[in-house]
Image 1 (cartoon, helix red, strand yellow):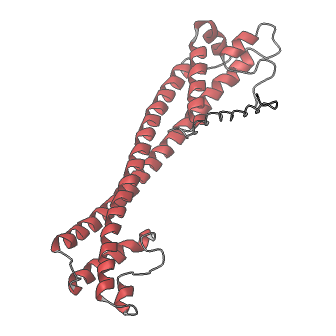
Image 2: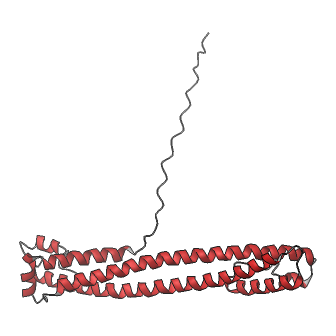
Image 3: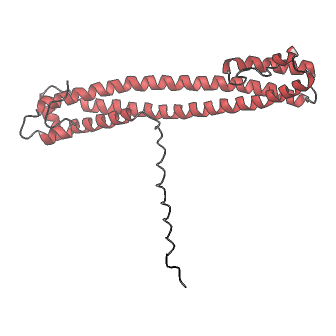
Length: 243
């Protein structure tokens, strides 16, 4: 005999929405890219034969548009160098971290061996950095700690420690120091290029704005036929450009 009370159908579990893609910052500031595109558009409008004569009547130099394009081109070249420098800095930072990790593996091996040789309470343990707060996370003090530990390990003849491992630790310390210098140099280079790009963009924006101010006078927003010309020069249609 069939069950008079049917078993309810379970409600299916809803499929979760797909995860949103992680947003990452680009290699260049978006404002820089937008300012470059704006400058190139304004320069192209100023070079247009239908606009150049009127702008010249308002006193815009004949070389203004070409000069702005030249500046924008130089800025784009610098922007490319900034992107390259940023990638070099990221690579140098990763190389420094890898060198640091490799050194720490060896130093902790030495510490373990020192624990076998020196009992709890022996001051030699402290000399090896055993139980030291933030050991390996204090970048400034790590090189000194590493140098001390390697010298102690050599003098104390730690149990089971082979000359090859001592040599590897010495090489790892040298590599760590070099990686730190390389990272600092890469950061310095990126900073210089960013400063040059900022200075060049200031020139680009000033010259672009001079052209736009001239166009704002040539085709005022109150003019009946000004709208398409103002759009071409990237000006607001219904109000003057902000001074």
